[in-house]
Amino acid sequence: MRPTEPTARPAEPDRDCPRCPRLVDFRETWRAKKPDWENAPVPSFGPASARLLIVGLAPGLQGANRTGRPFTGDYAGDLLYATLKEFGFARGTYDARPDDGLELIDARITNAVRCVPPENKPTGPEITTCRPFLVATMAEMPNLAAIVALGRIAHDTLMGTLGWKKSAHPFGHGAVHPGPGGGATVFDSYHCSRYNTNTGVLTPEMFRAVFAKVQAHLVDAPPKL
Ligand code: URA
Image 1 (spheres, rainbow, N blue to C red):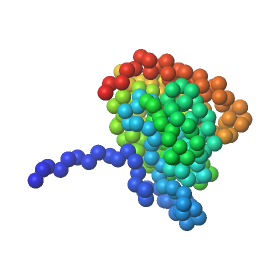
Image 2: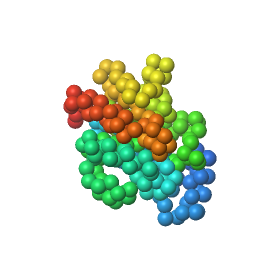
Image 3: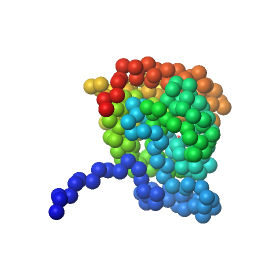
Image 4: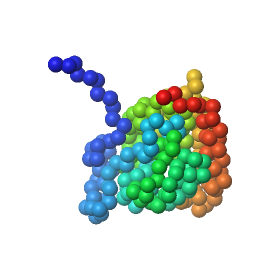
């Protein structure tokens, strides 16, 4: 018999992931109310070979939680996918449906918390409980060179994941945190949520400026594989 291989930690939770009781209850409620919705942890979108990883907060109830693809059908997806297309990180048509044929190029999108939280607000323990999936997602990306943190929660989760001190790397829109020893650089952005864009906290120009920095950074970071 062959020796048992050590099992790698999965990058995606099971459809019925039991880890966060509050999120399980919420998921079950919506499975009963809307059986035609996805109502399950939303997997990362885009190739693991990508150099860029974008980290959002959590699926929106009627968006990613319904469609099963990050930011798809969420208001925040309109600005995110339009910006990714503009900078060559996506091609095709974004039509707010997972079968719209949109393709990410050298980019991947994930969420700090994979299940939809009530009121769009995951709790601290839920964020911590879901973190191993972010760790595993990053671990399966051999070319990872740039990470965009959408909002403070994504930023703080990333700092924990990377083992960086938050005090040394405070969140700030437009802030760039170079990875030690040539590791992936973290780029902070305000979250592209409806609230932030409607109140002018984040304008499309401010969002573009973040991706312009990412694009410039990647010119000097050729893929390893
Ligand atoms: N949709 C997502 O998938 N993530 C977010 O952070 C917001 C909306």
